[in-house]
Image 1 (spheres, rainbow, N blue to C red):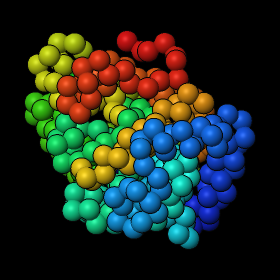
Image 2: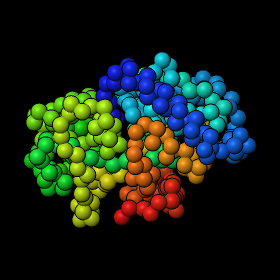
Image 3: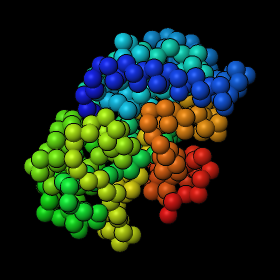
Image 4: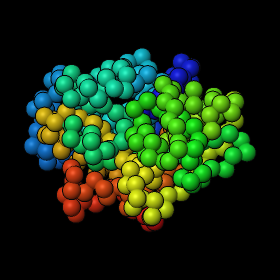
Length: 323
């Protein structure tokens, strides 16, 4: 979960940027109408055959103030995740209906089938795989350690005994709790973490690296250092939960009864990886170098044998995988 408040003017501007990004991706490399029809037929269903809450539509739960990932702007779903979902839904002939709610309510809404899908930099975890279905990754991300200016925390031992801030519901919480002597402080918004870091009230915080790029662009009033966390093989062996620091698969979370829709969405998502549409959506929202977010590491292979086959290959743009 990632949340921070966004001024209406900036949100409206980003709506225009996102629309232009979608148009650019569609004109430069998107699949043809025949490919879209193939995607739907491959899943064996038409737009009205999916078991969605409303026939012919995908009802999606998002949280308020979630840019660059999600935001409701005058009924339109705007952001990186929204752009990808809008494109997928269009290929499948489905309308997108936005429902704004809290992050926990999103997850509960999917499980109870009050909504069809939850998203917003929502990461795959084995626990969530038991509660619902998750699509193939739409992009990858990892943790950044934000800290006061002058601090240079880059390893797990350097976090020992520190007060560390995380967002409510973040999948990093168990990993932070596993660090000896570390106290976890939860926040309802990223702004609050950045503010406490800037004034020295908090010693460190975990934020998604992609979101951190966005904050640096739109929130120059925050003053802090941002450093990727290094995790050794020995540390991973001792605490497997530390793998969440290395890389997360960002996905769409769906009700278990919507296997047909998930299959159809995965076909289109794969096409978007192949034609590099996803790269365009990241760039449309200010990501200057999308390569790290489109190149999986071995950390994502923990999905094998859980909700993917043992020989599952995570999607990639074909860049050399990082070690």
